[in-house]
Image 1 (cartoon, helix red, strand yellow):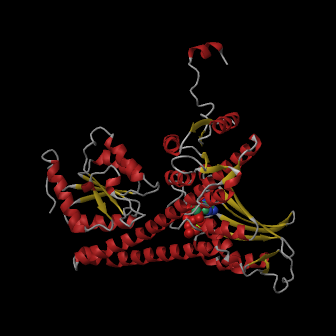
Image 2 (cartoon, chains in turn red, green):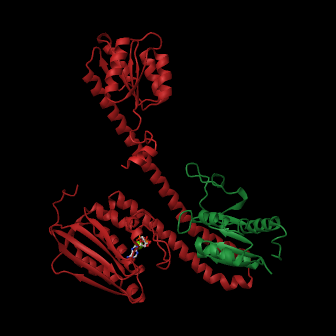
Image 3 (cartoon, chains in turn orange, cyan):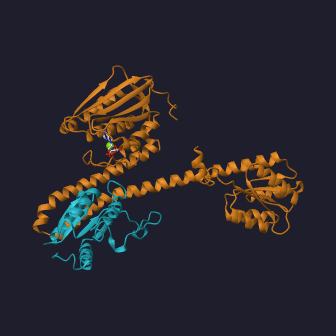
Length: 392
Length: 138
Ligand SMILES: Nc1ncnc2c1ncn2[C@@H]1O[C@H](COP(=O)(O)OP(=O)(O)OP(=O)(O)O)[C@@H](O)[C@H]1O
Ligand SMILES: [Mg+2]
């Protein structure tokens, strides 16, 4: 570091090393307080000691320590009560009870009322260190679990809020069309607009149907229900079959679709319907986000012990900054590069879910402006059906 | 000259239905499918009122656009109604206009109650005073 800058700037505030955590010790025995303080200070904590329950509780309320060491037998407020009151303040505080031999039964009681563990007197510094370390670790794990739980709930809420907005949007459009038509009565404007608007209303109800269908499919895939009935499926054959069903859409979109399937059976152990949902989604995207005159290539082959299927299009491609979010629920690439298309943004999340359930991977490469390739890799399945019962 | 309403909404059907209704009530209607285009029209066309959706390409595009509009010299006081279906009073999922920094009466829930929309626009225009008074909506 430049010595000048160093002398010019005051030392950085505590940011470098966070302030040590405070531990609270409540014990009426002076020697006990002293040795606990020494041991815990050596562990790197700041220690506050109190000689009775009332003062100790004040200290806990003030310092909000992660851990409290408390003697069970004290004049004034009992250790039992201290435990209860500390947990009233914050149920996550770890409480370690110190007790004489004679009161093991009481110590057990204390643990029943929420203490984490107890330490019979006399104890060695190592014993206290061990128990404190374990207690803090458990607290960390609990907090972590709670954070994850909270995150999950938040995500679920966000999802529900989003679905309801996605359902409301077409409903609002339909409502507004019908309402205006009613209000316009048999005016010339109404006569002129009626058929077109009713057609639009039907389109919007279809949008809602799609959303509900995709939403259910996603839920199904998430529960594993979509991939439960596994059988050997020849992917080469299945892909050809799927491609056939797109002939009409492909030609009406002025596109060309070709299948490049390597010879030999490409067998995977999978649910036939799930595979159809998977490749339907990828091929539909390759059609939807393509341009007249473009093409779609479906490749299937075996590669390093895996079955590899890729769907390549010559469409708009996917901007690099959007790629990390492609498989997120409801994500759709915004902006102006590609024209607006309808869609739920659930297609790729469904694909990812199915592939994961089948023990495979899905990834995308793309060149903005010239096309994308979605590649699915699945474990090779054996051509003979599994023994009955092997399916769980 | 009739009053001009700018509808900024990414739902073309919503814009069409509400736009035609406003037209039959004597308003001139222009529209934009996103905030960027909306901002451009707000500057170029000097509408008397703006109806603005919230959730467009970006989740809060409407609020963002409104903020930009308010920072544009000359448009600070342009009457804007935020029109959205994001608001909900269901406990646990409630988003209310009071929670945002909007004035209560600047907010209109979707689906829009059309006669009420006319009233609100009228009231706002009359309130906006002589500076904007240039002619009649029916
Ligand atoms: N082959 C592709 N080329 C370009 N963009 C794509 C391609 N596939 C997906 N995308 C982009 O990723 C977004 C998410 O795709 P996804 O399949 O999840 O939803 P969707 O196609 O919008 O809706 P749905 O599949 O439910 O009809 C799309 O909106 C599109 O912007
Ligand atoms: Mg799709």
